[in-house]
Length: 253
Image 1: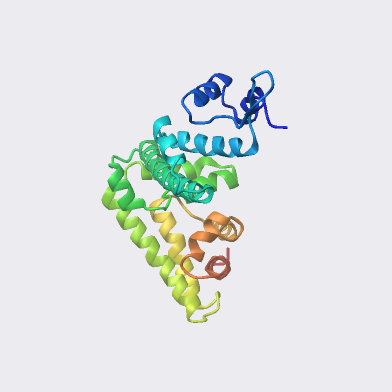
Image 2: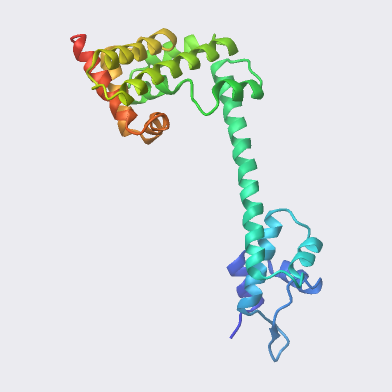
C-alpha cells in the first residue's frame, strides 16, 4: 500500500516541505506515485529516511549524506555500524561536557576557586560533599550540612588533595582487613572504622556514632555508595557497615 507524504511526515516528525525538498535534491525519492501523481513511500524509503535523520542529527550536510548513502559499496548494516560509532563518540563528548559543567557548578556552589583542569585532577569521579548532603536528606537536620558547607567553602586544591588521599588510606585499611579474613568486629577493622568516622568529623562535620551507623546502612542500601566500595573489593560495603556497627558498640554508642 505504501505511505503518503503526510503519513511519513507524521511518523518521522519531518515536515512535508522538507520531504518534498529531499525528493527534489535526490536525497529521498519515493518509490512510487499514485495514479494522481502523489508520492508513495515504501518501507525501504522509510529506512533510508531513518539513516538520513541520524546523519542530520550528527550535523552532516544534505550533500554529504547523499554521497554517503549513494555509496555503492556500503550496505544498510554498514551504515548502522557507522552511525552507531559516530553516535557513541558524540555521547562520550557530551558526557565529558556534562562532567565539566557539573564540576564547575560544584566548585562555584562550594566557593572553590579551581580551574576545570584542577577539578578533574583533584576530584575525579568523587563527590567531596556526598556525606553532608546525604546526612541532610536522611536526618532532616541541616546542622551537619551547614557545618560541612562552612568548612568546605574554605578548602582549596591542596586541602582537597589531602582529604581525598586520607580517604583512600582509610578505605584501603578496611579493604586490607577484609582481604586478611579478619572479622568486622576485630580490633583492626573497628580501628579502621573509627579512623573513617574521625576523617568525616575532621573535614566535614561532627560525625557522631549514630550518624556513622546511618552512613554504614547507606553504604549498603544506596547503589551509588555501594559501587564506590565495591570497586575496591567485592563485599567491602557490607564489611564497612558491619565494622562501623561494631565500632559504635565498642564505644557504647
